[in-house]
Amino acid sequence: MANRTNASAPYYSYEYYLDYLDLIPVDEKKLKANKHSIVIAFWVSLVAFVVLLFLILLYISWSGVLTDEVNLPL
Image: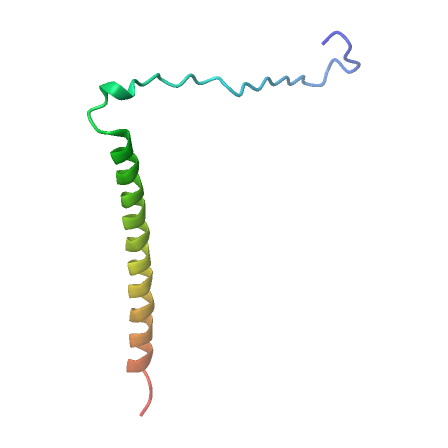
């Protein structure tokens, strides 16, 4: 900071730390559930969420088609 030429300009200094969070150590032997069953439950819930979104979009597209057919002139 001593080498600055313009003393009136604000001086910003940032330091970035990639490892500022230490993860909590987990002993897998003390877990009540098997570690593989936790991963399987995560993927099953993710797939169920994606299927739910797909069904919602499918229902929205079907409801849009039905309103167009009702308004057709004879």
